[in-house]
Amino acid sequence: MSFKFFYTDYATDKHVRSDEAVSETLDNVIGHMQRMLKEPDNFIGLIDENNVMLQFMVEDDGSICVDVPMHDRKGSLTKNTDLYESIEIVNGLKDAILFEEIDGLTFKAW
Image (cartoon, rainbow, N blue to C red):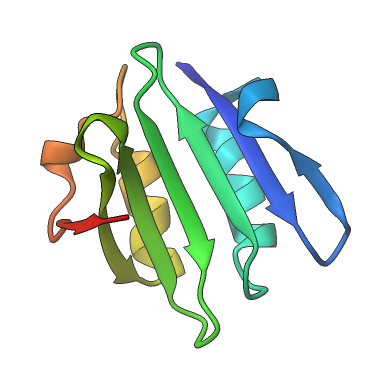
């Protein structure tokens, strides 16, 4: 199963914008997560075939913000976690991003 993948890596000054996301397997995404989600502000995102987006961004304290934008509600479902749980979330994806299956997300308006 592959998802569209986008990211920004400030350590290498490389990025792929969400509107130019590339197809990537989940195994490759996990490899990118292990390399990139260590530096503050770095982020990785996935988009499924239903255009549901799942993002992971490193906060200043080293935690990772999990974010599911909800454009129709003008906000996001979010939670803070660590790299291990972030990888577990991606590992648990099947054919689509089912935010209902991600424990602990809470809605925050933009």
